[in-house]
Structure formats: structure tokens, C-alpha cells
Image (tube, rainbow, N blue to C red; front, side, top):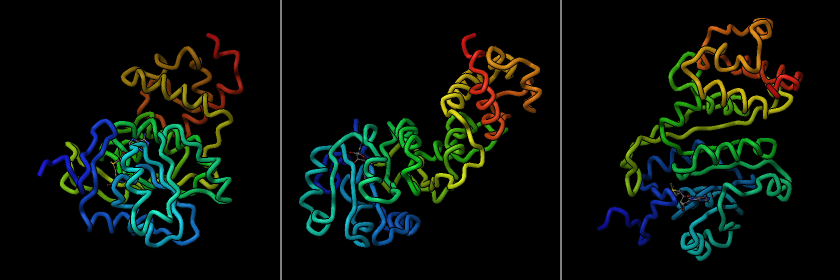
Length: 273
Ligand code: SAM
């Protein structure tokens, strides 16, 4: 059989389609998600239903967002899932998660084996809705999970680590080898749990400032902060915020980035320079 055909469907590379085929892994993911009746569960990219079926068995209703029209149509006519599903045949990158949470009257529990080609921008899209989200469970490239959980002073620590950890508590759940998918991806995978902070440990007045600073600092990650952020913060300001200008982007904690962001927001005049 063609190794791109799974359950009669030809996997579309452009939609990042790698379908889970491993019952043990599927059961482990569903156990980690722990869906409960009455919860507002939302799956991104249900595909052929590998996760949708076992999650749907435990619920009366489930929302799914699937870009592939053929797969959305298949789910609509699925014998036991079909009637329980609300299917949005659209791009998850443009989906309004706040509106759905308001309709459901509760924060959402989002999960999915994400298309790897868009997983990072999709997570940034979701971060902008963390007020409307209770938790998220995602299958990602293992390398991306490593970056999400990385702390300072490590190679994997970057903008994604800082932004993810600003919004969420990040917990690695399990590793998944390529053979657990059809077709097998070229990389190892892992499942991660992201839980938006109920109480923000590092409140930031304007997240755009944090976004900008991390982009500029990690854009020049080999340079010292004095060089990469010197146009925004004088040596005195950095010192007063307890940030050593001779450090590099990867040596700065999330809390320090948030402090820098708040100073910048409080001093808009420095942003022109
Ligand atoms: N959940 C299935 C599984 O685990 O076997 C399929 C996972 S597959 C890695 C990713 C799924 O996301 C595919 O069904 C694909 O069609 C869908 N997809 C790709 N891009 C999408 C997008 N922008 N919005 C929503 N779904 C998307």
C-alpha cells in the first residue's frame, strides 16, 4: 500500500497530514487530556479522527476545526461521532476562540496533533486567546517542545520559550516516535500541555513591548544586550532593572524580559529612537 494512504485517504503534505496509527500512544494522549462530560473541548485538525473518536466517546458534544474539506466531510458522516460534532471547515489560524468560549459559556480545552508546518504561528495565535482557554494539549515536533519548555542559559531557549512561558505553564507530557504516524514524519514528536496562568506571575502592561524586545534580543542572540537592546535601554536603565548588559539574550529570564517590557511601556519616548 502507498505509505501516504491511510484509511483510504491520501495524506496531503501541504496540510501537514501525519495521522496517528498507534493505539498505545493515542490512549496515552487521551488519558493526559482527561476529557470530562460537559467540558468545552475543541480539536484542531481532527483528520481521520484518531483522537476525535476516543475523546468523542467520553463527551456529548465536541467542536473540531479542520481545514481539509474532504476530511471535514468524512467526519460529518461519521457513524457515532457525526451527530456530536460541530465542524468548522476553516483555517485554525483565523479561528476566533474567544467567540466560541463566549458561546459555550466556559473556557475552552483545546487539543490536537498539529500540522507541523504552521505549529509555531498557530501557537502564537492561540496565546492571544489565553483568557478564553483553560488548557491546551498539542502534539508537536519534539524540537519545538524542547524550545517551549527551555529555561535560560540553554541553546533551546528563545523567543518561543519566553512568550509561551509568559502566557502559560508549560509541561512536557510524552515523546512519540515517527513510526506512530502514517506517513511517518522525518522528526521525533512530543506532546505538551500548556496551561494559561490563572494569576500572571510576571504581569506585563503591554504584551507588544515584550514581543518586540524578545524579537530584537533573540534576533541578535550572539550579541550582548548592550548591543542588541542598547537603542531601547541605556546602560543605567538596564542596571537599574537588574539586567547585566554584558549578557546575551539566552541568559535573560522571563521575569527580566517582562521588567524590560514594562519599563519600555512606561517610557514611550524611547521607542522612537
Ligand atoms: N488528528 C489527526 C491525527 O492525529 O491522526 C490528524 C493530525 S495531522 C498532523 C494535522 C491535521 O490538521 C490534518 O487533518 C490537517 O488537514 C489539519 N490542518 C492542517 N492545517 C490546518 C489549519 N490551518 N487549520 C485546521 N486544520 C488544519
